[in-house]
Amino acid sequence: MENEGNDAAAARCRGQVEFEGYVHEFIHYSEVVRNLSANTIKAYASDLDSYVSWTKREGVDPLVMTHRELRGYLADQTRAGYSTRTINRRLSAIRALYAWLMREGHTSQDAAAAVSSPKLSKRLPRTLADRDVSLLLASCEHGTATGMRDEALVELLYATGARISEASALDVGDVDFPQSQVRLFGKGSKERIVPLYEEAISSLREYLVHGRPELAAKAKGERTSALFVSTRGARMSADALRTRFERMVGAAGLDPTLTPHAMRHTFATELLAGGADLRSVQELLGHESLSTTQIYTHLSVERLKTATKQAHPRG
Image (cartoon, rainbow, N blue to C red; front, side):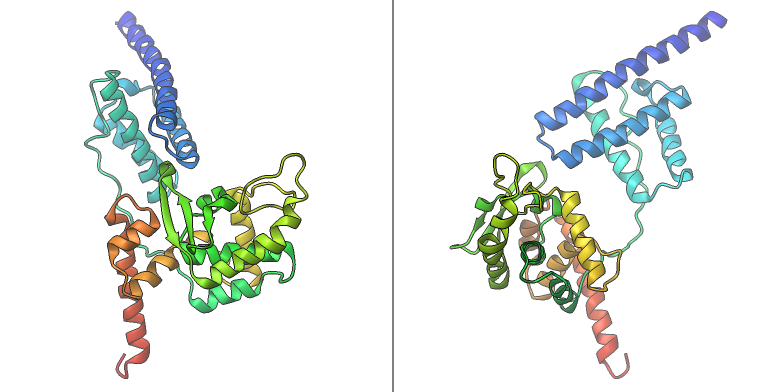
């Protein structure tokens, strides 16, 4: 009996080592073959590392994982205080991994296929009113290179609903001034063209003519082609742009929990409120699934309810 126990433990150890190698292969496959974004790859690596660590602690072989064991992992995540959104994201990474393992013939058991995702609370996304955006723009240091850059960033986010990572990846050549449009690269490097309104075009032009040259001149070595440039003349990362946006929010006296993604939510909500059809909004946002875009219809309805309560004599 003792030998059987030792054999089982040795088999689990071999399975663990083998599984970790497969995880690295899967991440490489997702990056090179599926061409997923750097942010998605980073999230996959972090989420799967958490899962691998759990299987080691629990002494389970992930290559013969059962549905019950996987539900145990999700229960542990809940007890550890992780949000439903984080748990769903981790389960999504695990599902993608096991689907790949099945296709490659590395396992015959897909434990994740029959495990349902925890239900998300119906929390509507945060948006800004037009006056809030005006306050953001007013908070920019007008007449300075960084102020012109910050104003151009706010106008771009408001005009396009771009993700902050997409704004970071923009090059100067991606802005088409004659056609009043910008070329964005979304998840999986999928390209989409989004029109720009006149105020956004004006802010971007002023920044490119008067602000960006001053910032780009501070680069050490070859100058960058990036649209948004730091005070050191380098491309601003998504984190740097996010930090800059949050400082503008603070300077404008707005809710400090507002993030650049609220501008994306605002863009979508304003379009739907103005009569745009859902398919068009889906295309402009770069959503793969229409169901992802549909949350904004609920948001528009909530805004109508609020407006009715405020304006109706019996509201």
